[in-house]
Length: 327
Image (tube, rainbow, N blue to C red; front, side, top):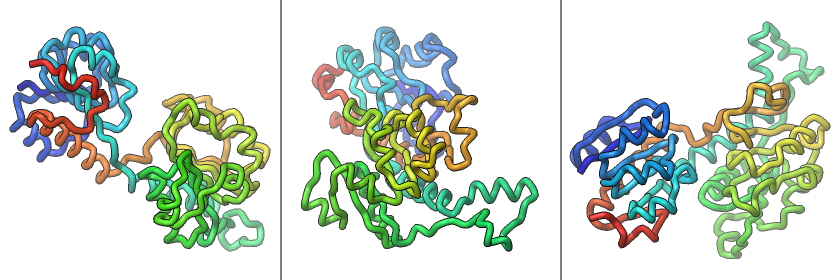
């Protein structure tokens, strides 16, 4: 069984050894320069692990021996799932990881913005040291303890955010497309409509997938309902927020600040107006990025391969491929 790691992933030595025990292993630690190079890497493989590069339709046409594709992440929109099914290739992903990493990152953003740490760091590097001048309020921030947080989306990450919020003795409001009284009680939250959440929350944090119903769900109408002292955090997907409306709100003071880890266009263009705003904390899509979460991602990716080889595929995203696997 030929196994190929087609593009860079975090592959710890113990996992490298485990893959070698599963079959004949080839690992590529560089990005393919083109689809043609990707094809050259995987054309004889039976199992492929793919990270961020993706797996276009034309690659399936050439990789005639391919039986299984193990995606080293949760999202698989960079893989042509329909073509994979037609070719009898089972595709598995890592449906749940980095819950803690993303949830903790949310509070790292919130605390940074409330206490204006990024502004203080920049000022200090520029030679300023004004802490005694407390009257001017140059670094005067706000505490998180006891504030109200609005959590939009109560899946695994949203639920973990709620758990952490209780540690700060926060009032928690939540909005979900499927409110459940049992879950409401279990999480210790109050499920409310969107208007209530936006108008009452000091922090609004987004934890929804990108779908037709969630695209630009936070726009001008929603932002104007938020408190002028409130903070918006987006670690979900950039397209969930109308960036033009957010820019206008931040400039005009409709909301106080925003923490953005994701953007409509990634990488963030060098001429993005967000870069010129001091009340925005920008990070390059790294909320998931911790040593622990990456280890978990690799572990599940290899588990998917192991289950496939045992004839018991798991975390399959194209179930219509099951039963069509190549012999």
